[in-house]
Length: 433
Image (cartoon, rainbow, N blue to C red; front, side, top):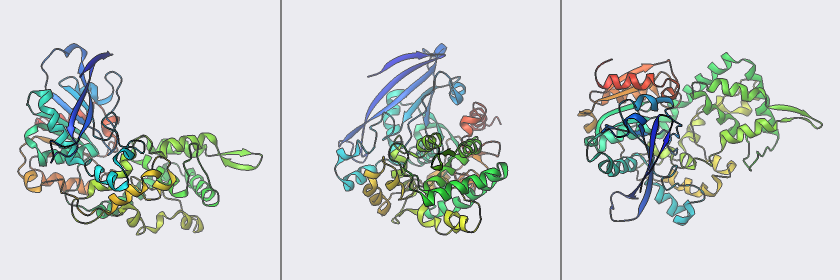
């Protein structure tokens, strides 16, 4: 069943599809997928090629654009665009603390969530593609984790692709989660150093906040416990084009004077709650490390274990030694399932996923080496979220892949540089750049 409606310059159509939970058992349990089609208002009746957009994450639904915002404006010049909510996100059978108990206990929930990785997402796309395109291949645009899915698509079903475009999302084909985070912590440290160089006053501000959290039990509105580790995780912002500036503005209003002395302001606490809460995207925390699982080794809370190799991230030691407090980046830790009310009921489920030892490969190196699909990828120099060296090694392993390596943008270049980024990459797939 579909319904169509208009926004300025665009006609939107809602689509819902039924797909197998486990594509190896096509006659078994099913789930529902939601996707929004967008087409330029003056081209709604034309026979246009399709572009499938795969969002970053994992665990986030597709962008909810109003009209022809950001990169969508460029895409609508040539394509009919499908904004897919990947399984478990948005309107596609969401996986949350409210819905997962329908599966049963933690063991049943963890088993269910093994079907929410890139391989299942690709097979979802191949199930719905013939229904929309009549069987014709389509172009895929993958941002961040959507790029990981795109490389899986090239591995599992390249016949479904006419062209592939990746922005900030070329994964390592063989790195274990430990390798990913061992490369990540030094990158994060560089981003923090750059932030403090830009805003040197934030060194003392961050130290003061961290010291306060080490000596006070702070519970944010909604029940989220603000520990010093949770505060440090705000460094996730530093991977975005405007993240350093937003972090600075957040820190400058941290304290207010009260009759009882300085306290963290309500405004600061409310902003931090919104930044730290996983209520809107719990799947990110649950399956984040599993996107690197491809063999019999468990991920086993890799980010937490590897952090111990970098003692400079210990806030208590930094304060005792008069060093700057380092923020952390895109990492998921077991303590998050204790501090965040949206994740607490899912702690045991997360533990079972972290211990799992039967992850299947997500990429086919031989097939990628023989690739015939035109592919272009934006690789952002010193990207905080995806290791540049890993991305370039993968680029060399995919036959015909053309890269645009730039330090003009951070990881969110598709948003910050739209429509120029998409235009450049589409040109590369046509050998026009």
